[in-house]
Image 1: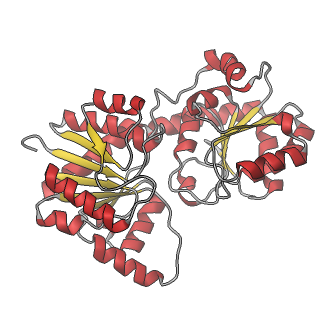
Image 2: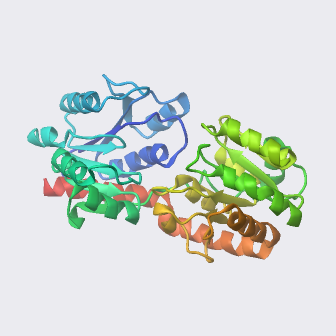
Image 3: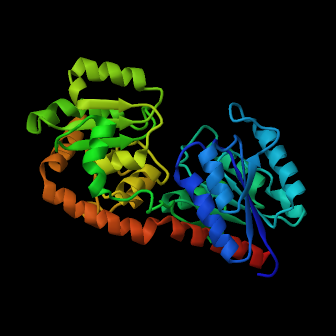
Length: 379
C-alpha cells in the first residue's frame, strides 16, 4: 500500500456508550495508522466528551454527518448525506455501519470503494423475496461485507443475494484491559454499587429493558431460586421500555429486597467485576457485546442460544446455554450456577481463555484492517 490511505467510517448511531462499535474505532485507527493509513469517523450524533477524547488520542478526525439527526433519520436523507460527505472528504474507502446504505454505486463511480458491516439479525417480512432483490440492487456495488457473526454472514449472503466470497466474518471484540477481572476491587465495588457487604451470589444482566431481552423471565425465576439460595441477588442494569412493568413484577412477587434495577448511566465493567454470574437470555442477538464483556470480566455466563449468541461460548465448557427458555428452565440453570462455586470457577477460566483467543478487540481491529487492505488491493 503506497501513500496515506484514508478510511472514512459513517455510523448511523449515537456513540454514547462503551459498546463494541464505539471502542473499536480508536483501536482500529491505531492499527490502520501502523499500516500507513488514516481514519475518520462520522456519526448521526456528536460523541460525548469522554469518547471524543479517545478518538482524538487515536488521531481520528470525527464529527456529525451533516443533514441528519439522531432522532429521526430518513433513508434517502441519510444516503444523500453520506454521499455529500464522502465526495467532500474523498477517502479511499468508505466503511458504513448500521442503518440503510445505498450510496455504494455512486461512490464507486468516483473511485471510492465501500465496505459495509452487518451487525444485527433480521427477521423475514412480507414480500421477503422482493425485499432481497431491492437490497441487492441498492447495495450490489459494496465491495465487501463484514458480518459480526457466522450467523450474520449466512444472513447477509441470503438477504443481499451476494456470494460467500464477498462476505467475511469479523467477530465483535472487547477491550480486555477495560473489561477484566478485578478481584482486589470486588468487595468495594459490591458495597459502592449495590450496597452489598457480604458474599451473597449476585446475578447480573446488562441490557436494554425490553421484551427481547426477557428480564421478566429472570425476575420470575427469583422466588424459586431464593428457596434454594436465600441470599441470591439479581441486578438488571439498563434503561428501557419495560422498566415500569419490571418494577411492578418485582413488587408483585415480593422479591424487592433481592432484585435491583439500575437504570442510570452504569459502569458495566465495574458491575461485572462486582458480580458472580452473568446472564443474557434474549430471544435473538447478532453477536452480543454484553455477553463477551461479561466473559472478559471473568464471569460464568448463562446465555440463550439464539442467533449469534451460539458463537459466544461452548456449552458446559466456557458457559451454559439456556436450553429450556422458560421461567422453570431459567430457575434450574440459575440455581445450578449460584450453588456450585466449582462450576462457576471452571466456566470462568474457560470463558476468559475463549475471549482472549477469539474476541480481543485488537484481533477485531487487525481483521477489519485486513479487509480494508483487500478492498484497496482489488480496487
